[in-house]
Amino acid sequence: KTMKTVEEVIAHVLHIDASHITDATSPNDIENWDSFNGLVLVTELEKEFNVSFSLDEVVAVKNVRDIKTSLKKHGVNIA
Image 1 (spheres, rainbow, N blue to C red):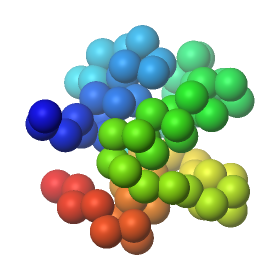
Image 2 (image 1 turned 90 degrees about the vertical axis):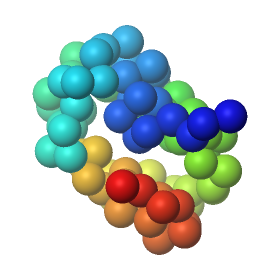
Image 3 (image 1 turned 180 degrees about the vertical axis):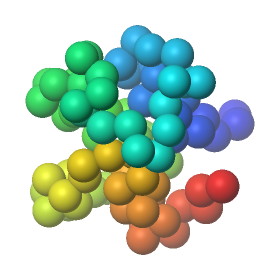
């Protein structure tokens, strides 16, 4: 199984095109990125990358770049 990219996971959860997602993309930019889908996104990212985020990490995320930074801290190799 090939690991999905962060953008692919976000696109899947939020039902948007992955090509529209950049590191600066945030909940302010995507209507579907509400608190519920934020939690779904956390769950999907944890499953896909085999990590477990702390509540502090989840709360600290403001955009896609923050997600990638958190994943890197967990040892995930992100391009």
